[in-house]
Image (cartoon, rainbow, N blue to C red; front, side, top):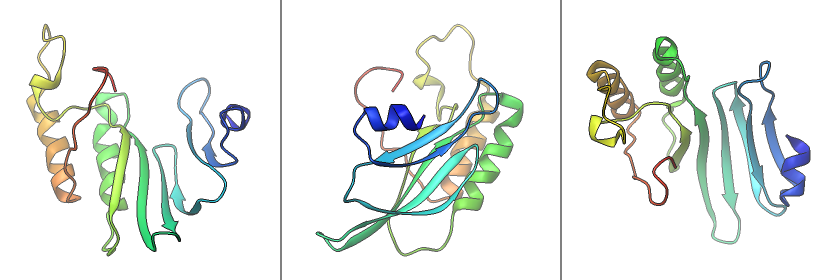
Length: 140
């Protein structure tokens, strides 16, 4: 992962190794950006970012929800555990492997379990998060 990160021009980064041939996370940034690692696991990388030019500090979490439905509650517990009473803005992005509403699913042959979507929505509410939507390709 480090070799790819450097080839892409990112001098700094945090890598969480994969377990076997699956998983693995990487958060990369260019030199000159102040990033302070808070914590990490196989599901997330959590950092504080300081912009000295603008005089602002904010929090970023890259998150990867379990691809397995039976493990999603564990993913949501991890997400809830990351919620702390900070006074700085918090931005989370990644692949949650869940949708908020059935209408977000492109192929509708098999309906999504409403209880799973409701648990996800409640988790976002518990963490005081809101969905900012997307633009571009459907899968992004």
